[in-house]
Structures are given as structure tokens and as C-alpha cells.
Amino acid sequence: MEGMQELPAQHASIQESLNELLLPWMHRYHYWIQLQIMAVQLAAVSNHSSSSAII
Image (cartoon, rainbow, N blue to C red; front, side, top):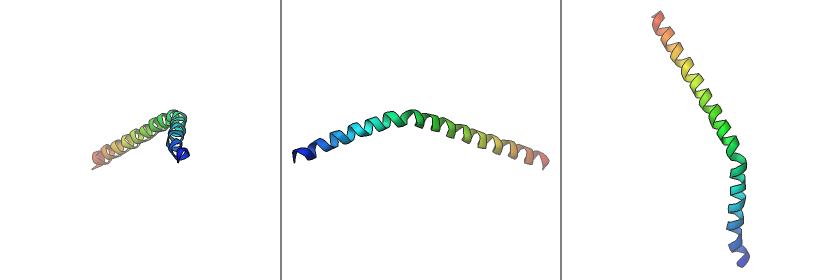
């Protein structure tokens, strides 16, 4: 059963290295998502204001 106890620690180190690899990409992706959301909101606001101006 000694080998079973070492497994979680090894898994944790793998998880940490994965996080270190993924973190920069997550930040970039998060930034890109926020840009997309801002663009969509801007488009929605401009559409709303232009349509209300026509009415």
C-alpha cells in the first residue's frame, strides 16, 4: 500500500506543472474573451441606439 500513498503527491506535481503551462494561455484566452464580449456589447449598444434613433 506504500505505492498508493505516493500517487496523490505525484498527481499533484503533474497538476502543478500543467497549471504552470496553461496559466499564460488562460490569461491570453481570458483577455481575448473579454475583448470579444466588449465588442459584442459595443455592437449591441450601437445597434440599439441607431434603431431607437430611427424610431
